Image 1: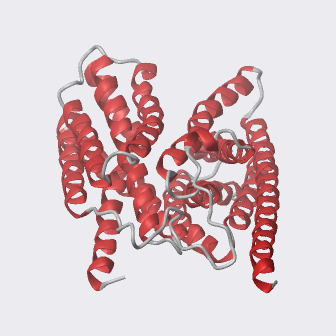
Image 2 (image 1 turned 180 degrees about the vertical axis):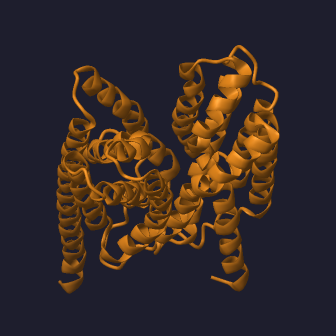
Length: 423
């Protein structure tokens, strides 16, 4: 790799991460929601739909953006997706009106879909620049996403109090537009001569890795085990996150401690997104994610039975588990199904996030209506984490078996070629 290529690789990662930083914006919607409800006269259900629409369309944006990579340059997709994202937020400035439909289109659909388009392209491209350290590369990108809430939550709160919701949308929208323009200018995919279809050169004596299309991927058992691992691994976090402060306060834990736990959890979340995938490059992705799930089982168990400050520690650990899964799954997906179609493939795997997001409140609501307390919800979350561990174990066994079969096939092919030469 030349000096110019190394510089381009660094610029792509930096400005790609800058753009990805703002894809975490929907997760601070709860801060905006009261102001929008007051100004537009919406109900809580109407206002909450903005978040759910952004999250759902984000997944579809990933799939469409990944599929577009087969026909268009990555830079072109960044320009299109980033433009849709920025336009959606800027348009929201003028759409806080009694009917929520325009806001659903701008803040919900346009934001989520545009974010998904750039997220998948940036993630896949940065991984291709670092074929031997895909965990590190994807970790840097998703860490930027995780840091969004930590920085934009307090900034948004101050702007909302001082300037109101419309000016806040305008200011944040302008910042998003700047990140989109800079990313569009400096973003560049690696030359095909640097990496092969799989993202790294095949080692002597091994077969080249198969590059699965999304259709081929979804016909494999491994895809559904991966999807189930993400769903059951994340639903525990989504059971904890909405009540992380109120549950601690209800147990008598000081409010300042409860708030600090959420802030510290955000830092641990971001750190896990970077550290764990980087570590996985050396010790293995399955091993690292198994460790995360074991921590999740323990943390959910503590939440179910404890009424002491151990609950605060468990909350922080669950934030870290969420970051560890979100940071590790992009590179795990590409290591199983190849990097040629990784953007689109990971988009389908991300349906696990959508299922978990909608499944967690449904289960919590059902348990609450039956008259049970939150400790039952947390106990169910611990069981789900165990199921995720089982699914991941089965996935790991499948991969070991497939690798052994491929290795045996390569040896047989080598023996057949060598035999006539010996004769």
